[in-house]
Length: 455
Image 1 (spheres, rainbow, N blue to C red):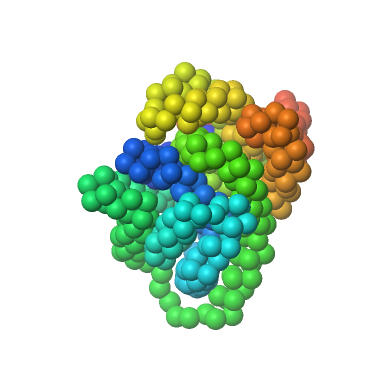
Image 2: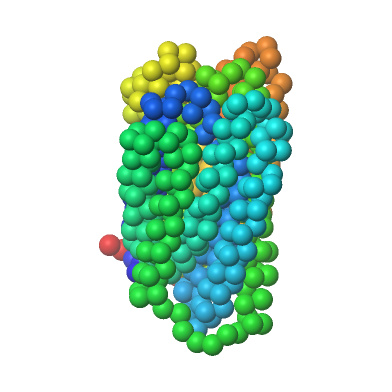
């Protein structure tokens, strides 16, 4: 378990993030392998099916992750304040939320998958295949959301290694199953969905067993406290969940714009989305680690150390994102070739990478800065940022300019959205990033920062 209220700030944040990154890289790695196997054994149509259902799954999954982050923040605050006896009510509230969400999403997947696909302009054989894929995937919703809840619990307690092992186990099982079902048994995209459902269920069982052994929760029921925690989680998590709702709806609009260009363009969009998630995972985990770090230190009352950790993490983020962008741009041809042999899809994938990846640092700095805002319980600020970047900039640019400029407008719209989002985020953090220099700090403040820098 990691105590993030002592020791060097950057080391604590990176030490917390790396196990999560290892797990999430495995998780995103299975998504890449999943897409590669689908592209190779099912074809461009299979990639289009995955791309068509992607916004629907993202909507349900990301909304729950937003709620789960609220519980992570709450657990981190309790840990930083030393109030371990209040953990029981938080865990019960998290459990109730997970069960209700899983049941509701299975019902929604059964009833609303068809109408949602129709709204995106997906019809014919593609719509039928996508609907079957999504309904098969919904069998794994209890495991998917349950594993996310267990991971949120581990992160809130500072035990990112446990989250790593649970997520990593599920990812490895998923890779094996998707290869067996799709490549060996020729089960098509339904086989890929079944592999995810089975692997996530097994990962949940492993996660619950480890949680019961390593971090047991004891004590009787406390119904008023559970209700209070539920209300607090909804209040804190609603802006986070709403942020993901906006993103998911926006992606649905983009799919509606893109699908008019045909399955090949939608397949290229799917490939780049998978690559973007994979390469951005380290920075998303740095954002999550920053959230836990800031929440624990603000719970302890150490505001200066929380700020110091953010500044150091942003510096690391800029350097790493430049390196990642350079590698992806140089390797764009073999990356595209992994997924498909279709010349048009490969050309579009390479062009998409060439346009957006030079601007990757804009995105990564923005998401890491959002980690500070979430940890400081200012979860509305990232929500407003999403509205500005995605709703007011990216979607209108893609919609209005794709006519005269073609599919390139959709690619450049993403860069425009990142730019607008980072601008607003820096505005929200101006009192943190642009505070007076250390030389002007009081002796007591300087002592706190030096304590945080000590190796």
